[in-house]
Length: 292
Image (cartoon, rainbow, N blue to C red; front, top):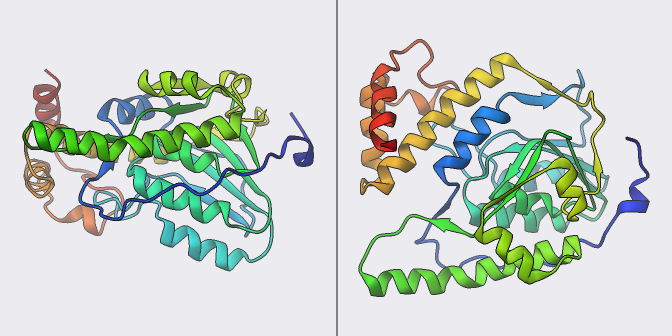
């Protein structure tokens, strides 16, 4: 489907707040990683060549220990400086990640002086859905998804600590509701309910609800089998880490345990495909135990 961006362009919403203190980290839930692995891993643009005004986001949001990559506001700002005062296209296939880093990326994109076109190639979940809202126009694949939910964190402590954490998160959830509502023209109360329900929206549903403007051309996306295998391997590691942290481990201990079972300690810092050729049976058993 071809369309004129001027017809669909909407005013980009205002800036979102960032926490003054980053002693609480916001994550994507392990279940979202699983759905991304099942339905969006390996999806890439079909074009052989990419323009020099294209920013690709085919990774988690925030710095990623397991791949050595990740999408950060610092990296995106540098890419925008290189693009200069030209229109920019942002291609997204991400399960999300650090919500606060996603907010920072969103704020960087909304400051770009020229039109920003967002293309959801597979999934824009969690923090990635916030980034998508920075687009003047948003295109989405028919089989792609936008997923929204409340800010999800891992926290420990007594009831006073939990109450303090809940109060800390509330304004961020409300800010996201406001951005979604402004971008879509939808009812804020209904959007808050969708966030409570952790809602996945298909391409047509996202357009119907105002989270996207048009469908991508049917041939705009392809499956890269090599990238698919790599995406799934790394996603398994990310999901296991979160499962272990949810069970009470520190992130350092969780990573050390996974690296020990994987048999390649430290490899993730230098290798974008950690565990390639390694024996994954121990990891499979560990994940099955955590999920049960």
